[in-house]
Image (cartoon, rainbow, N blue to C red; front, side, top):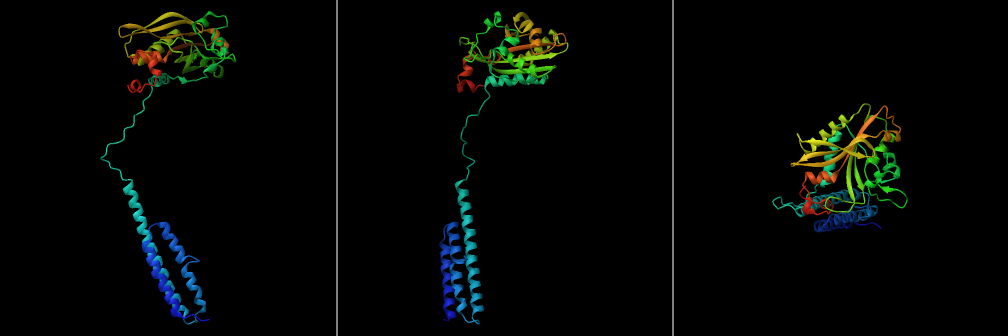
Length: 334
C-alpha cells in the first residue's frame, strides 16, 4: 500500500506546530526535556512519521527527508531557545531569593573568648617554651608509685598528710600534682631535660573562695650536669617578671617538699604586700635514683604553682568558684 506524500507532509507540519506550541508553554526544564524525548527521541513522534517513508515511491523520499530535517531543526531550535530562557529565569529567581541587603544590620552572634584559666596556661607555657622548655603531659589517674613513691614519698612518709587524696577502688588514685609527669618523662628520656607540665589535679579540699577539689597546676623540671640553685632562682625570676612585670621584688623562703632538697617558697611583692606564688627546690637525689639517673653526675631543679591562684591575682578575681560557674557575665570580661 502506497502512502500519499501529501499525508506525510501534513503530519510533519502538524508535528511542527504542536511541538512549537508545547515548547512555548513549557514551564520547567524537566518538562522541556520530556518534550524533546517525545518529539525527537528514538521512539518520538518524528521517528514514527519517518517510519512510513518506506511506503513512499523512491522519487518522493528525498523531498520528505529534506522536510523532516527542516522540522527537526526547527523543533531543536525552539527547544534550545526555550532552554536558554528557562535557565536564565531560574538563575534570576535564585538571585532574587538569595539577594543580600548589605544595608541591613547583621545578626548578632556572641564572640567566643578564651577561658581565663586556659589563657593563663597558654601564657605560662609560652614563656617557658621561649626559655627552651618542652611541654609534657601525663594521665590524671595515677598509681601510688608515680604520684608518691617515685617522688620520695613512701607509704609511711608524713608528707602524705599534706595532700588528702582521692583513692579509687582499684588501688589507683587521682593525681594530687603534676609532678608524676616528671617521673614518667624521666623514665623515657635521658638528660638534659627541660619540661613544663600543665594539667588538672585533684585533692579532697573543702571548696571555698580560695580552694577547690579540682584545680590546675603547672610544674617545670630541668635536669643537666652542673645545675645549681642559682639557675633555679634565675629561671623563676625571669618567669615571674614576665608574668607580673619587671623590677618586681622577689624573695625565697626555706620550705619542705619530699621530692626537692633544698626546698623553698617564692613570694612576690604585689600591690604593696608579699604574696606566695609557688614552691620550688633542687631535685632530691633519691628521685634521680628512682628513674635511673646518677645523682653524682646530674642535678636538677623543679617548681610548681596553681594556675587558679595566678589567674585570681592577675585578674583580681575574688572567688575561685567564679572560674567554674560558666557565668557568661563573668567570662565575657576576658
